[in-house]
Structure formats: C-alpha cells, structure tokens
Image (cartoon, rainbow, N blue to C red; front, side, top):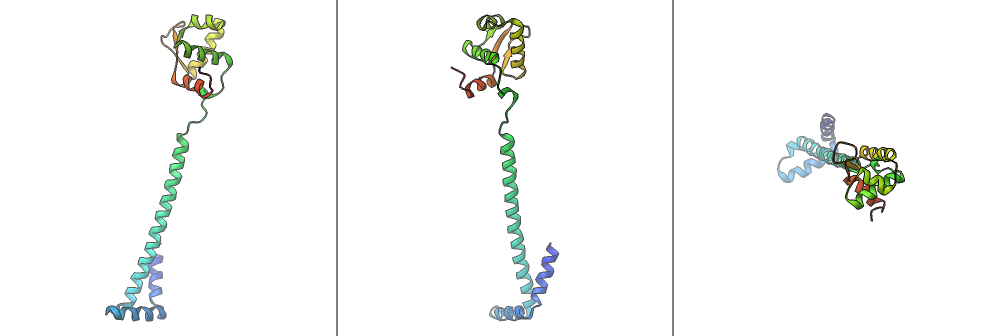
Length: 159
C-alpha cells in the first residue's frame, strides 16, 4: 500500500498544472527548484495521514467488537441451576432457606416426603450446586448455597 501511495505521489508531482501551482507558492518560501520534491512529500504526507486515520478507525471498530464480545461472554446464560425446578425441589430449597439448613430426617419429616424421593431430589439439587451437604454421609446436614438462594430470590420464592 505504501508503494502505491509513493508512486501515486510522484506521478502527481509530475503533472504540469500541479508543478506550476507549487512553484508559484514556493517562490514565497524561496525554493522553487524543489517543487517536485515538495509536491511528492506533501502528497505522500497527506496520504499517510489518511491511512493513519483509517487505521485508527479500524482499531476503534475492532475494540468495540471485542468489548461487545467480552460483555456477551460475561453475561450469564441460563444454567441448569437456573432452569425451572420441580415443585418438590423448590419446597426443599424454601425449607433449607427458612431453617438455615436441616438434616435429611428433618427435611423428610417437614415435607412429608418418602426418603427415596427426597434422596433423589437432594441429589439433583447437589448436582446443580444449589445445596451442599456438610458431611459426606447420607443423613448429614444440608445447606443452601448461593445459587440456591439466587434461584429463590429471582423467582420471588424466598419469604
């Protein structure tokens, strides 16, 4: 691109009308013999300025697209934890929020739920990282995690 601009600048400097105009202007500066070189350098400088401005605009547009892509990547998509949960799981989340955690038997008793069904729903909530079990054995205390709290709050289910 630079070579094309340089050749174009030199060709413009060879146009007689441009030479006459530049010579008349350069008489004021006292250097009419340097008309061709002055025209060449002036046109080249102007062309390079235009290229620089175009590059800055392209850079700005690229930065805008990158910023938009980063913002889009940072916006949370609907994760499995945020998907709609069965009513039994919502009831478990609400109970754990109200009680600040509870043991397996306490949850089963309060919700009047079969232990196998409760174990299934607790497992699903744990895999979705909505709750955690404090101890590693069945029957340990379950607590609500931040995502579980968020689930309830975003749906207006936390009282």
